[in-house]
Length: 348
Image (cartoon, rainbow, N blue to C red; front, side, top):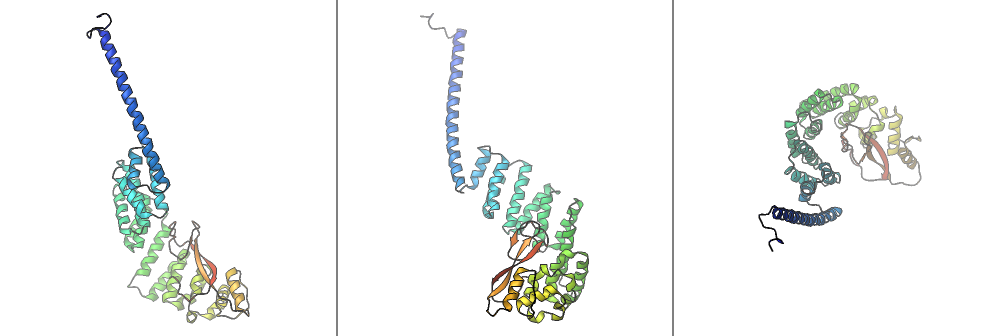
């Protein structure tokens, strides 16, 4: 009997027990691993199903990062879909949630930049400013943060702070000459002490050296100093300010000056202010001029859209910075035939 079953003190018995223990542990580990993998796949499929119908919750992004080991760049790509779709509130919520679990400083900075952008695009300018100032505390050479901070200060009309940012960007060898002239022009336009006459003179001097600000100069002169506008009409690109001249009131037009410029004559023939049988290279003006000589009453007018020369995006109203790419004074006027409506003032 003793020969059939080894004594527990026998070395062979110990080896058998160890082998059985290893097998049992391996079996249990393998079984638990299968169970866990099955459960994980089930949860992952459930998560994917929710994602397909756009119902991912904020915590789901954390689970994708911490539990499923999805790469951080992939997480940001998923989260940024809300930003690109204009759902800024959701994007902000997701980035704030991820910031609570991300420890790496580089990743945190990237998340903070995206959060600042979301606040900016969502119109939360003060919060966006606070985020970018926080970034600059530990990354003072972050050009993206500096550029957004410049935009924010401009929108908040904190022009002195904007000029400080321009100086920093200049130190970082960023081409900021145009921004500097642009902000200087805005400072002059907003100055409550300088008279309209003095502003007109200073703006015209700036215009002589910086042709790209002519839209700002034209808008100011049309609003506050029309005689100076007509005296300096040769300094303006009439075609790219067509909407401003189109919306001018009849009594504000100097027709002696108008008759010296073919395009102005075409504009006011199309408006019906001048009775001339002329042609125009601009199709929309030619159509309207033709209707003025028609025996039938045609209910037609001009509307305008604006196309950015940099990013080619189209916008319904003129803005000094392109809302899409933030380039300065790159929106070009594009006339469109439309049904006649009540006379409205230009967006100045």
